Amino acid sequence: MERWPEREGLIVDGACRDALLPVGKLFRPMLLLASADAVGGDLLEFMPAAIGAEYGHAASLVHDDLIDGDEVRRGRESVWSKYGNVDAILTGDLLIFCLFECLTECIKLGVPAERVVAAVGSVARAGCDLCRGQSLELELSGSLTTEVDDYLRMVQLKTSALFRASCQTGAHLAGAKDADLDLLTSYADHLGIAFQVQDDLLSYTGGEGQMGKDRGSDIRNGRMVLPIIFAYQNESPSGRRDIEMCLSGQLDAAEALSIMTSMVIRSGALERTAGVAAEHALAASAAVSGLPPSRGRELLRGFVLQLAGSNDTSGRG
Amino acid sequence: MERWPEREGLIVDGACRDALLPVGKLFRPMLLLASADAVGGDLLEFMPAAIGAEYGHAASLVHDDLIDGDEVRRGRESVWSKYGNVDAILTGDLLIFCLFECLTECIKLGVPAERVVAAVGSVARAGCDLCRGQSLELELSGSLTTEVDDYLRMVQLKTSALFRASCQTGAHLAGAKDADLDLLTSYADHLGIAFQVQDDLLSYTGGEGQMGKDRGSDIRNGRMVLPIIFAYQNESPSGRRDIEMCLSGQLDAAEALSIMTSMVIRSGALERTAGVAAEHALAASAAVSGLPPSRGRELLRGFVLQLAGSNDTSGRG
Image (cartoon, rainbow over all chains, first blue to last red):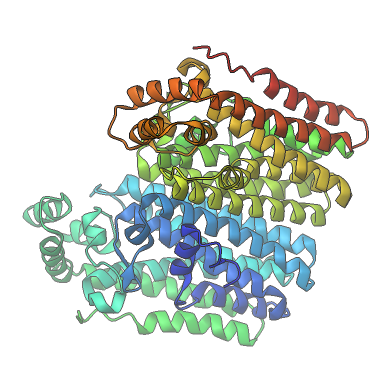
């Protein structure tokens, strides 16, 4: 990859390659291109921005893994784990700057400058939201009185942010009308929530191999994910004391996860959590129904269905 | 400051306020505005970008202090020292995204979109350079065979980057011709080097209070600054062994600094270093002489003179 020159051999370039390759699901680039297609536009002109969306995603994972102390990502060593904290900070920063460079490259492919500026603005605001969402997540950590609304606000900032950035960038670059931009924004908000809630569930229903990451991370960091919030609401005083102990850091992470898993199952928290995911998946789907028929719109709907298809609370793994 | 809402009370917003206030010298915003003025332009239209230049600078300091383990900045606790590592990572990230948001705001003040896109591209590339320069600095740390050219390449990436970003942004927003953009780029490159070399000297000639930061940081981190590179070149084998010991981390930082200070003075390294600073200051001044006369051009020249005026190698403090 020419953007991360191997010949100069800087550690940070090698770390960027590791953060990007082998490629993941490329979900955010696909969101961007599907959104652009849904409002009409020549997708080839938007390829640099689609690549940028993946850079932004990779940047957030690199800093996130460092923040959470997660040693595994996509089944391999995370960047901080392999290169150390300092190069992980620099790698994330570099990927953020590259994301913006990518956006400006669309101008060479014929995208009007006004549209590029609008996209840069959307990505910048989404990036600010992402940071605030992560800061809020930290503040809520270990706070068992966290309300569902606090959690949803945090997720809308943290997880929906890069979905919004992708959908809005596609919309802006393709010259979407304001009404269509609003529909795609609403889609991204709800999809982000559905996705995060689903991801939170995976710690209790998914196997380690399936996730390619550390299942114990949320518990170890005292993250107030929705299954825990619901379990705490539903539990008796003695059950609540058990939850408090699991999040206190006094137990080994695997043991805490095992106890919490049986509690979220017996308290009905898994079903309630799955219900919230389904509700927001439905809202995402409804939002794009307002767009005219197109291949892009069907793709966007398909993403929701894929998510719903992975919504299996039977406790596999 | 409305951009960092106090009412929401997120830790990361408080940390951003701390990173920005009380304001420092605002050197990068002034570079931007002086550059814009030097090529003709309505400065009021560029104010959001000038504010953004300070955000970018603050972001780099927040991450840099965390990387270097520096506990003091502008005479106060650095952000990581006050808020912890995690919020320092998020604070720097947030300030980077805000920088780009600021650039897009110029469009509302009448700056043509093409110029804003060019500025975004310059800032993004400079940001990439900055990260690569910091990564290179880490790689060179403790490597006593570092050549002057390696050092200059690192500084041009690391320190000149945000000077380039400021000067090029001012030039782009004001619609500069390519030839003038090149002159301002050359000015920024040389000024950045002169500035960094001067800053490296300060550890040996300036008092702690004057710097508002930790004089022992470079030594503690084994940074290959120019005075050390020159001292190592000039020293006898036994002097070289002393330098190696100072950078080995075996000595207390204050003791290592004291030994290194006497060595850089006796080896003539201070004079050679001051000579390099003067050479690049001269080159910076020469570059802007190619611009037509203007208040902005005189300001840019004045910045060089200020730098030269602080070039005092008599060993005060």
